[in-house]
Amino acid sequence: MPFEVLQKRQLSEAVFEMTVAAPAVAAKVRPGQFLMLRVDEHGERIPLTFSDWDAEQGWVRFIFMVVGKTTHALSHREAGETIADLVGPLGKPTRVEGLGRCVVVGGGVGAAVAYPVARAMAEAGNEVTVILGARTADLLVLADEFEKLPISELIVATDDGSEGRKGLVTEPLKELCDAGVVDHAMAIGPAIMMKFCAATTRPYGVPTVVSLNPIMVDGTGMCGACRVSVGGETKFGCVDGPDFDGHLVDFEELMSRQRIYADEEREADAAYRQECSCRTK
Image 1 (spheres, rainbow, N blue to C red):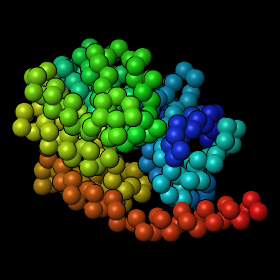
Image 2: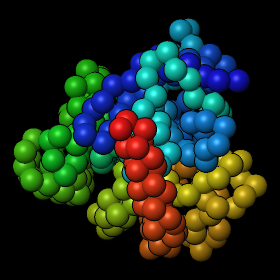
Image 3: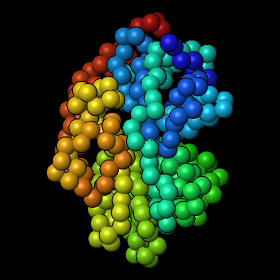
Image 4: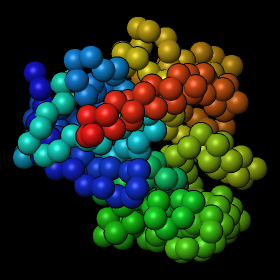
């Protein structure tokens, strides 16, 4: 059954937001969960995390960065067109109740996941601070939406200082830990960012959850592609996660597995771009 694209919005040169009609999925989504989709019947399945949804209106929304052939093809879908498959919600919802003073760190497109999580934590009665980071101002995602949430503070940091304070997200995170105002932390973004966020909170004994994005094939735990090591045990990102204790994750193994098909991904994307170029001539 195809799923209609209701809206597409380009957030930056390579980042897009897409809203898709999926009433049955929208009725069950919880913060932190993800979906699997195929652009067309010949495409691969890819995991994307929900950034928002509306159960009454029957739509779900996700944000993605163009990094390979599949996301490139997805970025060409326009409102009124369809995608072949959308399955979800998958994974375990993020815990949001009874956390106290929370810091949610969103890096790059990880902000798409951080948004519904921070909203749910605030609605559950926690005191929430959000740290939003990116390399440059152009790559910041959902900053305006975060400002509308009932949170205590929004801290924006960019590597080059083009928006907010100059520096990495770990710097304000450390300052908050130094001040003793953090009971719980969650980091969502590139693996290297989550690794250093967990390293920042570890000396303070602050429980820290990370949302992992390993390679996935089916999203049901059957293929084993999404396996990660957590506390010396093998876990599966799609059914045991995507949330895990950041102080126990083997990030070096995670990042190594994420890069395993990088060359093939670049080759497939280059071929697809060439194909698109030929079609327009």
